[in-house]
Picture 1: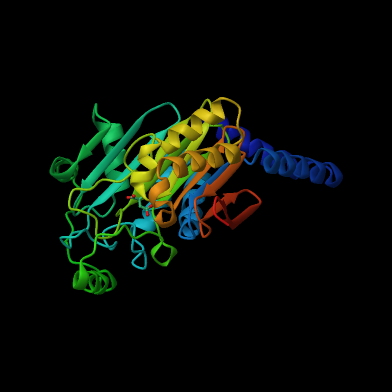
Picture 2 (picture 1 turned 90 degrees about the vertical axis):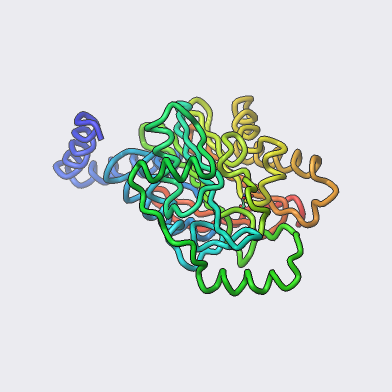
Length: 329
Ligand code: ASP
């Protein structure tokens, strides 16, 4: 936090302490009201695993006032969650039995970094951050991304599957059917979008992708504009679900552009799902995808193809898990 901002924050805290009690509570309720109306700062993330991730992001935001650090640190919680089968190295592997990871991070000024099809890296989101901060590029993939991780001092992890992932992989191998599997135990990609008190926005997205995907498959999560898009002038959006269906409509970019044209975050998410349904109509019964968006005023919305999608919301006066509405009821 800049000295001035930190000074202002401290001064405000201090001033409410020395005001007469009536005025102090009036001042407190004014701030409470304006925060809840504007919902800033605000952190949102996909699925229930977003709750602990948001807690961490909030903690970092309160300490640092840095929304990019907040969204990076927040999703790192999910990347380490051994119960999660769709984020991090403990996620379900590809058809060869290898976990490969995708991640992206973006700031509202257009800076972004992503990694795709990366192996042996515990925190792909931090690697994506390094791509953004330390290279002239936006995306590194596969072995190149791994070599960059080594050069940046990231430890290389063993590729041993977690016991649950190993069990599910062995079960899958009996038939080895290629069928995209989504919503496994309601764990999916974590996409996090946030807005700081200063109006700066950032987002992060990290996943082990589709279970039992073809080796080399990359989903929407590391594709800027598909799994994540952030623009301080308008808002931010992130996606979860079948990546191919989301890439086809540039889902997150579409939502931000719809908000730029005046739609609310909710209307923009609904329009994106409508577009996704139209472009994927043949298989739509088997496709789940969900979008989450926030605009620069801190209004938010979400919408999914099928019921079951939810998101975690965290702001000054409330943290909760919210069920999203969906196209199919
Ligand atoms: N969107 C991710 C992908 O397609 C998967 C998911 O969200 O479940 O890789």
